[in-house]
Image 1: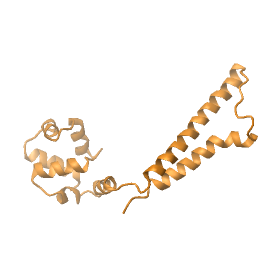
Image 2 (image 1 turned 90 degrees about the horizontal axis):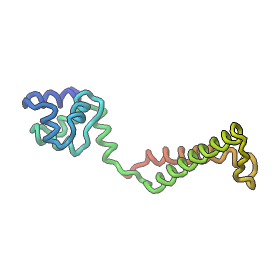
Image 3 (image 1 turned 180 degrees about the vertical axis):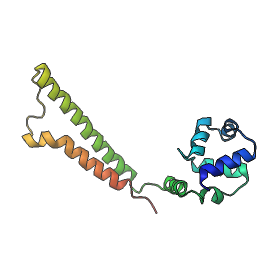
Image 4 (image 1 turned 135 degrees about the vertical axis):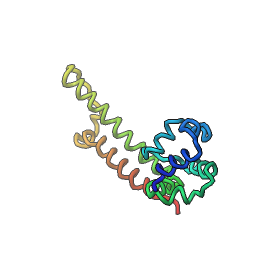
Length: 151
């Protein structure tokens, strides 16, 4: 039995409404509804509270649902290089910002007749591809570091 079915069964066995269960767990009724429909999963703290409330083991709640088990495992891991990941995320966002600025300037020059130039001192190809290069480097670095966890 998957987690969502088990949760609903245990709640109904105790004659609790979704709202009553939500109040006991200090969450919204919508959260309980999403858990019971399989649209979302609770945090490990909530799983522990559910285990205590229903008088069943955490193992009984987790083992039946591989997706929930994987979520709990991932939530418990810590990134190996969080500062470097933040740096690569910032590089990606800088590239995206420069791309938007470049497109705005291009639009102003093309359709409004403005004559705005930026970074004339850089070689022509470099300032044209700089936002793209920053986005690729930032994205690849962030994605790579986002998969490295402390063992």
